Amino acid sequence: MDWMLLPLKRYADFQGRSRRMEYWMFTLGIVIVEVVLFALFALLGAFRTSDGAPSAMFWPMMILVGILGLAIIVPALAVQVRRFHDQDKSGWFVLLGFIPYVGGLIVLVFMCLPGTPGPNRFGPDPLGGTGDLAQTFR
Image (tube, rainbow, N blue to C red; front, top):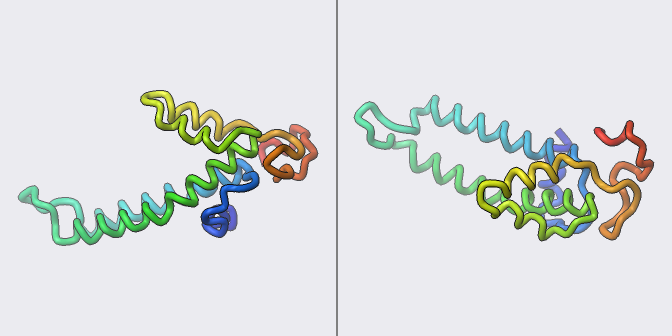
């Protein structure tokens, strides 16, 4: 649970490095929250009524989703920038995600790659700097 909340604690910290564990657990936490919200919407009947019109709960739920989305965008960008820093790449690599069709796939591959062992220009190794293969997937 700590890994899921760590990017929220480092809300707008674009400095330093983040491990893959921090990035992927934060992403998993976001997915879990989205699934729970979707299930809540379905249980409350917030999608559509039988005649096809939006239900009374539709707009309050959409406002809730919008507020959560706005609250999570800064820490999501910050943890992604720190992941690029872990690989000794500029945070501007985040903009690769805007390339149509393949940008998201390119960023996904970068998020899966291990960071550089030992310290780099963005700070010390978050794994401790040993660089051995056993710690690669921690």
